[in-house]
Image (cartoon, rainbow, N blue to C red):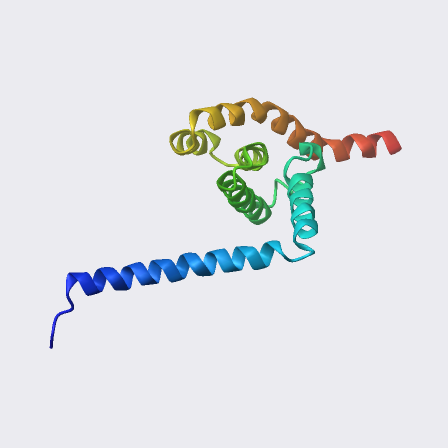
Length: 152
């Protein structure tokens, strides 16, 4: 069995890299030439903005007595927050993370983890959002009772 020389290996790596970059350029050109590309992109951004930066009062909070519902809500909010932060949508990501903290059984521990993992500016934004989210969940939990009392 013969060994492949370093030169041959380097040439193969260079060719593979060039092919990959060529494919990326081809795919990008094909995507941009699609007449519906900009329309689809705008629609996707609108959906993201509506879903992410909406008022926290429009959230359908889980029944806080149902542990399974709270756990599902918590996990979905953490996941959505992480995804939005990864996409650079800081406000929307922090909104979702603050909802997760609001329903978390041990918020102090979660806040410690978030403080270690998030950039300081993002963590400060999260801390500023928490009181408003706390009010929102209290209104959602107590709001139904107030409406029922007013009706009677």
